[in-house]
Length: 293
Image (cartoon, rainbow, N blue to C red; front, side, top):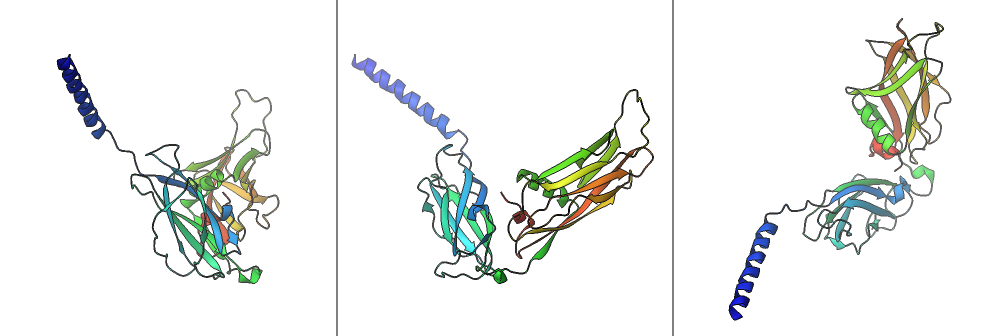
């Protein structure tokens, strides 16, 4: 009976050792990743001396479990980032309040940059996420003079894709029968194509030129302090077309506008290329800051 027990313990020990080797060889989880940072509830402007910071993240080491540690730092207008402090316990939360300039109840106006980093229980640190907010006094005169942000060339598809993810719609619609409207990326640029639909046996020969309406940045307003200024298009050399503004021009915080496109060639098809979009916004920002989350 004793020999059986000794044999059982040896067998059990062998199982534990094998399990240890299997665990040691398993792939280790990656570090946490901040996927989204929302400063001041998504509002671009504040008159307060502190703002809320909300972070969203992945936690590979413990999926579904709140991240245990975080730290933040602030860069004031025209200054440098404050030193990183120690990591603090999140307490299971993902929203905190940060002072724009610790010790100063009336920080100067301008753009503040806020950075956040997370750490899991295995001491793996996340990427550094960055957000911005503009601090102004209650009087409009405290707002810094706006500057232009020009988006050109290969940045245009990035702009339209980013705006679409934020809920700003781009649309295309035929303005007469037989028109087919295509808004698409072509290489590193954005093309607006109009062509006549092909039908097997046309009953009536339509001699009118086909026309399409293309709309941009519809459905939401820009952040406070931002303004759509203008856009530019040019005919595509291979299959040219003409374009003209259509409908009311954007006013206030709206960036929504439309154009019509009509093929120039005899084949009933043509394209224009979006070459530039200009916004006005606070200095020290990025054009991405113009769009509400």
